[in-house]
Length: 403
Image 1 (cartoon, rainbow, N blue to C red):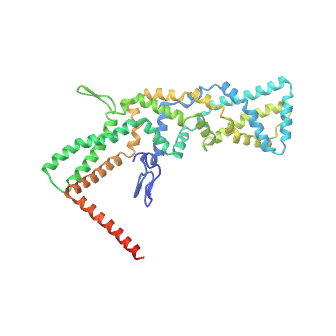
Image 2: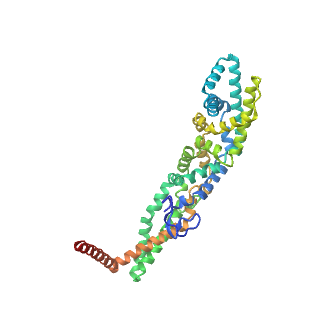
Image 3: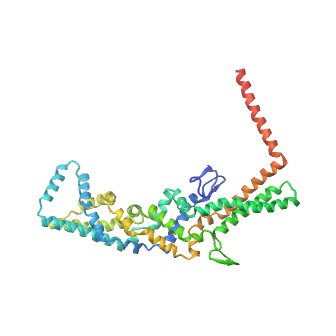
């Protein structure tokens, strides 16, 4: 019920916005509440665990320029091929002329290329707040694949989820003993359904309390009590940071967000084209040429469009240098118990009442079946059902024989 089904299953006669339960049907709580839960999680990451500006300062603009320098001629050649597809001879002639230039001239052009990339990398670091919207980056991914958030929560809280499942046996057994004692002194047709409802409600309520409370270590006689999830802070920090760094905030995903997010793309395009114009002006000025503005506009638009095809050379370096996993893990381990509790509790808290009521409903149905077995009503129902099915088959057989 927490994680499945990913999409709503049932008859969509009526259903409120972001409500897992419809009039007839159900959607897993996490897939249904993905947006709200993702936004809460991102707020925690960006305000308590990561300083994006500080993280991106770890990149060395010189290394970035070294990695991207060989890609610039490929990018320009690809643009030239698209703008003049029937003039391949011109591309070959241009390449030939370039390599026939004096060595010092080629070195100067390579230096201009490297400076362009270095300065652009520095400018991105200075403006990363306007170029990368971490909230949109994460939430968009979670909305595109609603199973992703559930996978993260399961990795972090599998032991608590197993406890929530298994606790029904132990708590149910203990509460069932009380119900048995009550049944010895009070016999009523509704005793089992009512008792089952109480046991179902109490079981889920106790399990949720056991997982998250008390938040801070509390001494109770010779024992130190604390919520089961909170005692595993270091273990959960390692799981959370590894998943987040390797699946959500990878270099590839960050660049995709920078280049495609409607809230950041205009800023990136402006910054890139400004530096590209300086680069192109320096190159053309070296040959005594003036760059036509219309031509540059076409080239710049093509460059922005084709840029993603040339960024793959950066990803290994960026992933390694940002060190997001170690940063997230270190900060999460330092969180207070009260703040750490908010990592997993929201997935239960969003519909905690629904989970408790669901336990009550299932307990009521189990009690109803139990009462039916004790009174013999279940046997009677099975006998009637079997007789009806047998009669239907006999009638069909007679009809087929007559035909």
